[in-house]
Image 1 (spheres, rainbow, N blue to C red):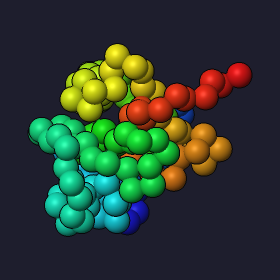
Image 2: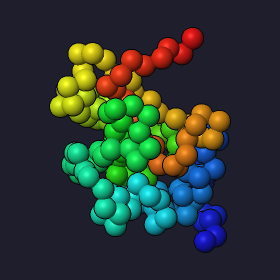
Image 3: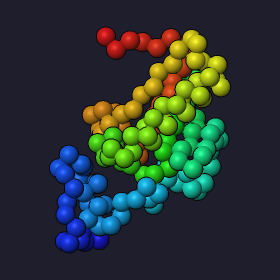
Length: 145
């Protein structure tokens, strides 16, 4: 698909992905990518045990758990990286954190403690390019130094 030339590029603070999607008219809050595993899960094309779902979020167990409780809280809107977030999506990030907090309570790991992690791009450890929040608990977490 060729980018539109009548649409100005967004600020360079946005990733090339977002700039292309804006130019191409593809950026929207309810936009899902055809080839994204988390979009496929949200569309129920890939079965998983859904722990929570509403209009904006979905939560499920990580298939490669790093702790006894390792859940993912994922927005349904396809946002590739944290660098692609816009200011109008701030409430979505708040919703991710509050849902993780509620899931920690449901799992009984809230009082002992848990870790929330979001990775950004390859060197940050991101392997699925659709933002998501990891909720890890159920064991002593090692410090970051």
